[in-house]
Amino acid sequence: MKANHSESRSRRRLLQTAVGIGFASIAGCVSNSSDDTNPGEQKWSYNGGFVEFSSPTIVDETVYFGFDHSMALYALDARTGEEEWAFTEPAWRVTTSPTVFEGTVYVGSWDETLYAVDAETGEQEWAFTEPAGQIRSLSAVANGLIYAGSLDGTLHAVDAETGEQEWAFTEPSEGLVSSPTVARGTVYIGSPEGIVHAVDAETGEREWAFTEPSNEVRSSPTVSEGTVYVGSWDGKLYAVDAEAGEQEWVFTELPTEPDILPSSPTVVDETIYIGSGDASLLAVNVETGEQEWAFTEPSEGLVSSPTVAEGIVYVGSSNGGLHAVDAETGEQEWAFTDTTGIAQSSPTVAEGTVYIGSMDGNLYAVDAGIDGSSEDSRIMLGTFGHHDEIATR
Figure 1 (cartoon, rainbow, N blue to C red):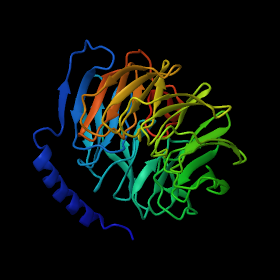
Figure 2 (cartoon, one colour; figure 1 turned 180 degrees about the vertical axis):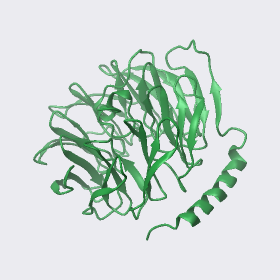
Figure 3 (cartoon, rainbow, N blue to C red; figure 1 turned 60 degrees about the vertical axis):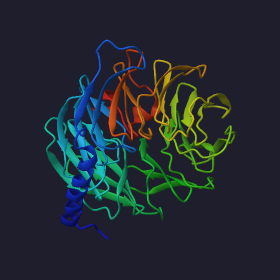
Figure 4 (cartoon, rainbow, N blue to C red; figure 1 turned 135 degrees about the vertical axis):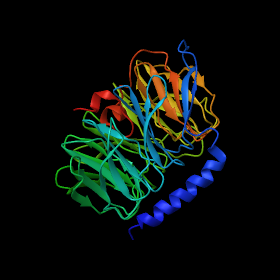
């Protein structure tokens, strides 16, 4: 049943009051460090009050990010962390990662609404209220459409300009938390039944369903060179032909328990990078499915999904750390540990700074130790979190 938004907003005000007791002295505050930082050192942090899964998007020197307890979408100056605006219309949590396209920010909320917001002013352009479940996943804009998964098991295709629904794919029987990925006219999304669905991006018709996983697929697929890569809670990483839906190979060799893959994979050149529930960051060859290396320094599982820039892999760990790892050798370059929360947010690198959220309530900007930006398949497809390069394509 559709939520009553007046009741939801009343609940939101009550929750904001309760949260304010704990966060009144710090919410909305910027902590600045010196501009002269070394790799792995904090440039600034912004406290918006609790972050779970939202991952940062950086476009035109602005960071867009959702905060759970604030129930809001924020725009922050990427250099200083100063707030530019806050969109507070959502009546419940904002855990999706914002997508920015041609001057509009798109974000979903647990209030069962997809919002379009002016990227410069923070004013609402439209609200799509058709879903009968929380929106926890969002795609990049492709062919004038944005795709959102909701907890009623529906994948929605919405006109990015008008907010009108184009089609709805309702075959999943359980709620969708995997974020849809769009590539070459097809939308790929995982579902808790252990299925990866391939759906025609224009019509919403199913192209194929990959049913090999024996447990949930909460991982978001990535696509590279005609192959879909996706992890499952059965502890396996699958490579699937993007056109036919046939398995190419499966990686099953997680080092230790728990043998689940809650992280989403990303690809650069000939290597897939993915985090595992046993606290390992894995590098796997795209052609053979053989492990290249395993980084085991984190002490708790990796739900955060990696990003890669200039030969360095960045990933958050559940013990609150942000790790920078050599993409070729798997050796740690540095670790940022000045956070007390669990990093389930996934990092984005833009112009030499890595941005990541934490459950201690902060969005952190950290010196990446390079000059460039993320260049991996997850970021370039805009699956969750991205930077300027896909904002106008």
